Image (cartoon, rainbow, N blue to C red; front, side):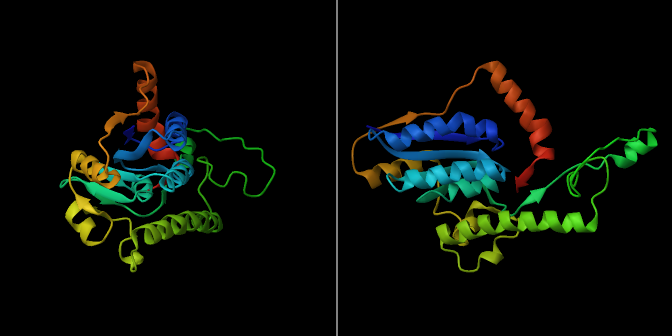
Length: 243
């Protein structure tokens, strides 16, 4: 029997979902895994991927303890994942929070016009090219997109409010990040401490002499390079993000 650890590093996206969902299924199904500790260093990612992982973590938490240990950053979608935990630890120098939603896309229409390039777009459906980079969004389209983002934000905010028992959620759900000490004052985390402190706390919670096993998937050098490149140059700028 052992406590499993799982690293949540970098951008939360479909690539991460495909890598760690089998691990989460294993943790859920195996009785020999007595608890799960997420070791988090992430600034968030896309909303859909975050919620897929979060929902699975909540199912695990119904059967066995789930803790989170925030290292450098536990912000936006990564903080949402941490909220699935029974307890959240953070290092003294960690950054926590950023409860909000942002969507970033490029409008290259003026650049193309200056270059003498006119995109040819054929569409059926008034809003089919609503987020096209080849033209500016209209005010109506921006309002539509904002309403979609509001739904995602409400889901994020309400989960934080419920899981962390924060009454004045609008005071913290502003997109700001907080130091660990301030995050603890705001009830965003439970303890200031490192991963070892988090592990020891769970061992005391379980009350049995068991080991620790890292279940983080290890990709090859090429796959990790491809993942890093995709995250760095595309996911950060052209996906709907919880940030």
